[in-house]
Image (cartoon, rainbow, N blue to C red; front, side):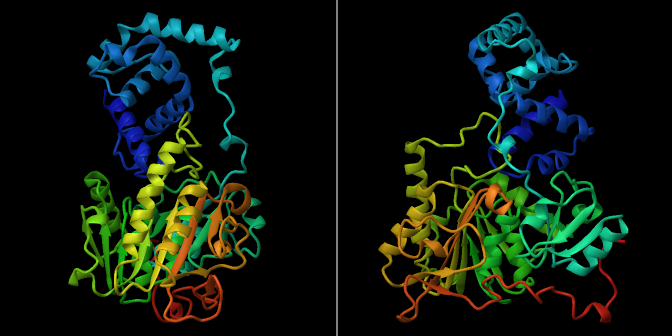
Length: 460
């Protein structure tokens, strides 16, 4: 029973975007993580098929005590797995419907004109994409780039240096790894590389974070000592990244409405060594910009709830194109959150990001809010060499960044950097940052200059 409950909990965590499949499995404290990972992975693969079978058999209507996620895991193991070797009272409930579930499976095969279970699995769009590499962010709160590179060399990995072009990232194989061409503390490994049991990961010396997800904090680039708001913070990877950029000097006010996600985030921040964060289980929209507590907030990171349409590892069967009604609701919330953030009186720079590829949640939101706030803020032209820019839906939209597996070898993402405009500069729709803040990563390794005068802090 514990196995099925753990698998159902992982499915819930994935739906809430608490983390990746591997991180949720390895953080579940299950006795047999390999067995749990296999069960969840296969349940996900068959998810659309299981939905169809359960709906046809009326399982959830008949057994109202069964949660949809637990039911899906149980039905998978009954029909496609090992036949419900455990399960306790839940097993008894599902076995009452075995004949009907098996009949629905047979009917589905006839309807789709297939003979074996595997043929029920339609190829997914994500499966046709080039695999996204494994990105590893070096947590500079606990170690530094040179030490982590040395550690992996001792583990038998071959370091290829800094990549000059994105194309080099897709050619990695075996135990090769590179330094990312854009982000100074991001290492790149072949896509199937797994570090969830590595002691650097367990100790919080490295963070497994997609490159696109690293962009908002990197581009926001608050100076050490700054006061920063992370408006929709959980599960906290971006928060820990901001803390690393601040070198734990300053203050991060992190808000999230979900208490469970916030608790998970708190644990993660402790492991990452982020000590400058004040977490609040609070709606960011209810925070008063005029509160003296936030009078020194000059930087805001806003990554609001979105459709998640850019996520590479989406749940099978989950819609990749959300309904127009849902998009309107999400965009309305995003506009409200962005407009609210721009009302903090001391704000100088804000990073707005989503893991969505939908124009309604990205360029349209930024355009509408900029129009509302007149000439007070402008878009900053960041990472000019980035190959995938904002859609040309309004003047200056090219200042924004887009990301996707095909063009940037990352998950689908969108980032816009807004900066307070002190006076008219005649620069047009967007301005440029200095080379380093705009993405000139050269020379930013945090410990190159001091490596000779201190002992390594990396796990040996």
